[in-house]
Image (cartoon, rainbow, N blue to C red; front, side, top):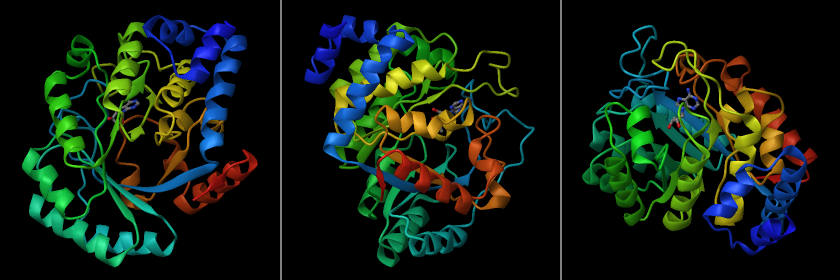
Length: 332
Ligand code: 5AD
């Protein structure tokens, strides 16, 4: 056991070690958590606050787990006008946000050139970094947006196992996903990957494959949350992902990457108690605050009971800043 933890400190985990670490019981996992927390805070005590704007819930894909999948006709679809996004970005800049994360479903929702103009306008009128999360696009689109000034791109690979990928995504392939990710990285974006813990048919071996992929790809960001069942999807009735396993995975991502941006995700805070706090304790160093306008927020229902929908963003931000301080960290 101590040998395993030593290997964690030295970042020398092989596949077998990772599998063992994922199987640790509550008592023993506390040493793993201590290790990832120490690695994090010895590098920096900063927890980065990002402002998330869900600009549209329109989506052409049919991911079997996701509530905004194209075939879900029960939700009302919206698309924020570009001017509204720009005005919101000015407001967020005034409120001290350092990053705007724009997220949407996948497809040709906005004209790529008009989106590039919006990115340029945000970059020249605010001090914020711009993160995009619009799913799979052509190399040309990624290039256009990078040249417009976008800094980061989040494209969760969801699972690094191609059979599992096809089971989750009836209309996508892992190969396409990976091509997009390498295109994004090669263009110079700070790139974010991963997905859910506990999605249907995911095995511990699959998680090992994800962690091995992280080692090779060296992403700047790794976003992970538990799978949360949505009734209006083909995965209706499946079990939610396990919080304890999610925390072990987060801890291992910290151990393997050392300095990646790892958010304590909304999904982690939406099931169980004290998700943000637990995430910070195992080495998370980012929290995204949902800044989507109230009228749209409830419509971006990728899973039910999203934590951010019940409270307004100012209240959540205050709570989170207090939580960061009480966890012995500082917010930026
Ligand atoms: N539970 C948890 N996470 C989900 N996502 C989508 N649907 C769910 C769900 N039901 C995650 C996916 C996607 C991101 C936007 O949200 O990983 O990439």
